[in-house]
Image (cartoon, rainbow, N blue to C red; front, side, top):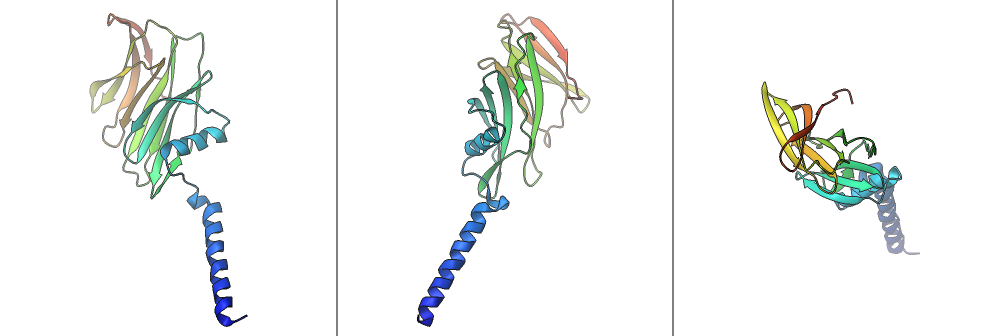
Length: 189
């Protein structure tokens, strides 16, 4: 073989080696879309494929409120460089048929730590509940966030870096606006 052919074969081998390294590297296992990253997190826990009820977009962070059988989750994905990655924890909430409503917490932080999206999400079993409010403390003032019920699910979300809220309690209202349930938020969950 001529020196020129050996050089071409050498560089083809180098390029193939680099491509294989990039494909199997843990630093390059992101996905091209946030939904793909969400689906990867589901598959890792044998959860899903779920029905996505709502997608919440914070730019480099997206939250998916989803349901699978008798489970619900609000899982986050974040954009790092050119790819989307699921958040580190995936915590679905099992629907308890004996409770009027139930909730859980979650948070997703951006790569640069300039955003921290916190959320309270859950489901409603009582059909008389049409509206929920989350009561929060913010700089010694009481604030209220409202959530509409979508297919029996709800989600409250905020950027903790912009508004450092402390969740206090959940209020549930019927179609007349009458308070029918009130539950203190368990901060230890």
